Amino acid sequence: MDIGSNIRAIRKRKNITIAQICEETGLSQGFLSQVETNKTSPSIATLENIAQALKVPLAYLLLKKEDRMHIVRKDERKITTSGIEKLKVAHLSSTKNVRMMIVESPPGASTGEAHAHEGEEVHVVIKGKIYAEQGEDSAEFTEGDSFSWNACTPHLVKNIGDELAIILIAVYTESDQAGDLF
Image (cartoon, rainbow, N blue to C red; front, side):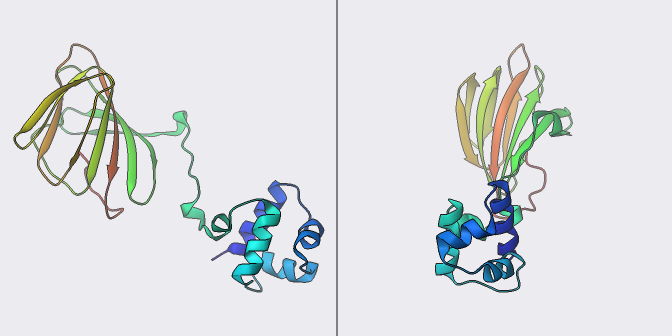
């Protein structure tokens, strides 16, 4: 873990000096410097005092870089296509187990044959009219409607409207190695 670098980065971002942290925590400047350079490992109690001085939760100091906020700007989204209909998929953001995307489906387009994969999905229709089917269940959805399912049962989604359908999809998987999501 790189707790010291986290402490230093937060301290610098907040324009707090080592001396100010030491004054508030009672720690020596030499000790805090060793903490920031990862030359010593402080106790949980000491980390709690440092976190309070930095005005951040203790847990934030312990986060690995890959577990911190990840930002994807609109113009930086990864865009792919899916299925034989080449549905446009804009990948929003993700964590190890959750992915979010916006799928654009032209009139008449579908995800193809009913298929199954690992994970759970939640869909929100942003625009248009779609038909969704999973096993014996099926329904039509319009703007603002939502539905969810366990994706291990074969399913399909089709745009049954006269305009482009836009669907926001969140997919949860137990592993970060999910294949084709729909």
